[in-house]
Length: 536
Image 1 (cartoon, rainbow, N blue to C red):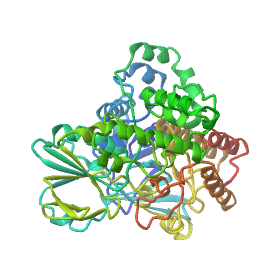
Image 2: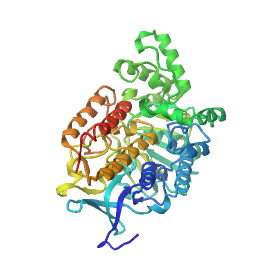
Image 3: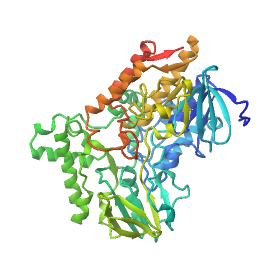
Image 4: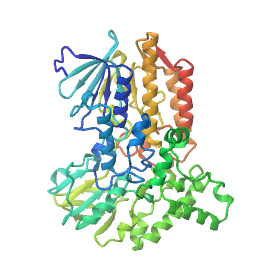
């Protein structure tokens, strides 16, 4: 690629990121005859699964569904080894896709996009990178990921720590040896819940610093059942089509619940919850018709899960500290393999930081709960600046030089999570205002990519130069996103869906809850001549 910034290379499109979104977008663009390149800050493909190599990293959607469906040959030839695929296997799959479809030659690795500025006279974007390069493109597609901007809290004293420290989303490729080490881990969200049992197996001692207790249900992961795999592959296309319009774009492999929670007696409720616990996964979300929509009903599920923690964890004080005070349905549902059992190990200590958090990092370890805990290694499982972090890390300027950061200062504003008014020919994959993280991500990524691809073909065929969302469409969509969230319990406590984990970030519920409704809306917009967009 040319490096003369005074004469930028001209392309049809630039794709930011080479995770599952960026790879499929690049494939689609080239299949449709558009000259495109993808910029990726890592040295390889895979996005989230490239960076998050921490012990125990695993997908919590079934592997036969958490995969591409655009190629029937790919679906048939790839074989998953487990019900829930591990990070190494998912990364191997991403690399297989990149090689099979010849994508690497169109991806520039070890390159971060620093800015994208729209020139109104030429109606093109000037994209610059941290390598001093500039590219001119008609279209820019942001596929940088919902969970790719890591959150490392600014703990005082971290620079003084004499041991090693790591963030789970920037894990060394060569791994970390915990043998004979006193290890501390900060964070007990989904990542911490996966990592803690595995780290505990090799560390001399593991100290878990918990600010907020979390619910978790056994994943019940198993080796892939060959009969199950064969049954799906016999009609993979039909299987996908049936799942596509289901909530979350996912077959949960459960019969629809017949009753509301309090239509049955306490004994029957207990039997139903036990069945869900034994099934594992997100079965308890679907135990009753109102399990995650009615607060009283969800409190019944929540109390069942608290009781389960008390049954599993031997020490009563530790069990009590592990019991969440919020309800089950207001945070991301976590799946685990022997998470609560890990606290019965003699080499694991829980430090309850719910009152004051981690006070400081010292030269020798962590000060929390009024005491200093000496450590050799510190692990931060503190999550991400979700959904907007990777977008706003780029200096994006649209019409009139307006900054996207300024426009989103009070919270992200978009139409369908695909486009934002004032930023022509700029698209987001799984952007704020789309179902994104509340769905089975790869199939819904494909929906976005297909929509964008069809849109670009439409512009080419009709001779339009630009497309952008209108305020008349954007404002009502923000209201619709808020209204959909209000019909659920997602806002019943602080969570990262609303940016509560990032100090100073506006509290706005970002994903759109209703996937089938969203899909219908996208189809309606196209059927009505890209209603809500200005085509010029």
